[in-house]
Amino acid sequence: MREKLELVCPAGTPAAFRAAIDAGAHTISCGFNDETNARNFPGLNFSREEMAQSIKYAHRKDAKVLIAINTFPRAGAFSRWSQAVDDAARLGTDAVILADLGLLDYASHRHPTLRLHLSVQAAAANADAIEFYAKSFGVRRVVLPRVLSVPEIAAINRKISVETEVFIFGGLCVMAEGRCSLSSYATGKSPNMNGACSPASHVEYREEAGELVSRLGGFAIHRSAAGAAAPYPTLCKGCFEAGDYRGHVFEDPASLDAASLIPQLAEAGVTALKIEGRQRSRAYTEAVVRSFRKALDDHAGGRPIIAGQLRDLTEGQQTTSGAYRKAWR
Amino acid sequence: MTQRKFALTLGPLLFNWPADVFADFYARIADEAPVDRVVIGENICSKRTHLYADAMVSAIERLQCGGKQVVLSSLAMVTLERERRAARKLFDQTSLEIEIDDLTLMNWVRPETPFSIGPLVNVYNEATLTFLAGKGARRFCLPPELPIASIGTLARAAAKAGAGVELFAYGRIPLAISGRCYHARIHGLSKDSCQFICEQDADGLSVRTLDGADFLAINGVQTLSHKYCNLIGDLDLLATAGVTSLRLSPHSGDFVAVTRAFAEVASGTLSPKQGLARLQQVAPERDYSNGFLFGACGAAALPAV
Image 1 (cartoon, rainbow over the protein chains, first blue to last red):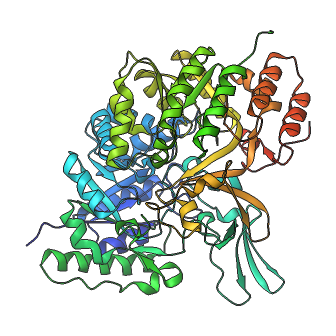
Image 2 (tube, each protein chain N blue to C red; image 1 turned 180 degrees about the horizontal axis):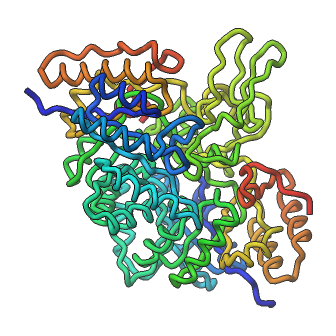
Image 3 (cartoon, helix red, strand yellow; image 1 turned 30 degrees about the vertical axis):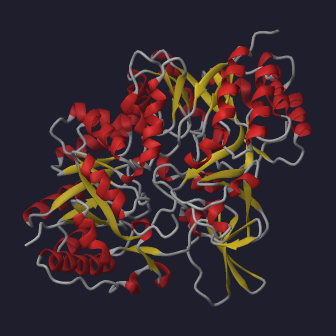
């Protein structure tokens, strides 16, 4: 038997939380229903009471809970975020996922036994950055940014003293996470400050001259033939013109599916694999978790992994192994 | 000369300019620009560093002769081994202050050697600012997306910690950084064999929507705003908030004139309206914005003065 990788799954609602655990998730990542987490969407995430119940459910089933408090606290309102850390600790979370230096400093002093994970929003992309967080705050695990290749991840793991977690499936940030203000430039709302990227409140679809145009903050992000599926206008995945180029300037719309790389990621010393998408439906979460749990069990048991089974669930039906196989380097 | 309300800092050159243009630019800044500090060195792409390594040595000497404080810039995102080595090497010397734009460099700072924090480090609240000040940070150029209320709170925290707050006041706004090079991508090149194609665009390459609306600009791995941040009409507001210095980010054209306009408005010899008129005269094609300051959206146009 090989060493088992930990499967970390997102949950945006208590129902999705239970479904993910029942489908085989080892660990659930989730957040409170406010601007303290980077998936701050209407109707999503957990009240304190829901969180308390969910943590109890997870612990009964031998699963772990990670609470993401991974936006950057607003100046003058730090106590809203520090209170979230206090509440997470009080409710018995297994770890908190943080990005902000001030909040990490607070948590490490106020809750010395609370396990700290570094959010991908901190964009710690090399061994020295990771060691800085480990030394300064006792961070125990780092979620790696989605800009690294498998050999780069292996090299990092050889140098650091803490665990790493990498994304295996779901949406991809094109830019370095936590270092992007594109959304606030167009809408005034940003992932760092408000926990929302390209927010639905600023989206507009309009038919113009036989085309369906989707706009964000008034800027056209996509134009598609009427009747064709209009993609959600996530800013960095839009079609633009630059010089003579016309098309996806930043990234082709594809979502991450690195199932086929599970053996290589294990070999690279990764501890946990993370599925993106706290904003997804319960059915989506359940299907993805079931498929990946099977893949991990197959890997641990020395059986081949069957990849590509989740194609129907991915955005635009196209998948990529992202930076893990760096074709564009 | 009238006392100025702000120190003026020339930010690092974000674009890939030919070595001779680079040398001429800094020579003019050294001799003629009323700036107090100059942050110099590659901030965006480590592949560019060798293109002007020689020009940089003489630029630093000339700037110092011109009475400017020289601060060494560092990479916005350190990933490769050679980038880590280069970043670490910056700390071999202690005569020049270093500006940190990636927290990787925090490993090598010494509390007795003051350093500054650049606009790409996420300093959004007092706790983060105080933590970094405790490690020796003496100046913070704040993230450009912060609204004025946050800036005021952070400036008070900085003053308490014996540090100063600087604000990005002129230039295309750095919005994002990526592992991928967009100049290479849109020219059908890979990052490793990019032919330094970004050299074609002295102020970045504009990205338009399919409606033809100007929107963003690309600069290698960096994405900037199409509009130029321009806070020349907001200096009183910034002074009240406790901002102590202004960052002017290098662009093509007569940049000495840009620095003079800010210096003269800051000292009260020009009105904000006259200052803006001067800037419009220097570069009539540029669109300006101060939207981030008011918490609406960064792309909001400058109101008429």
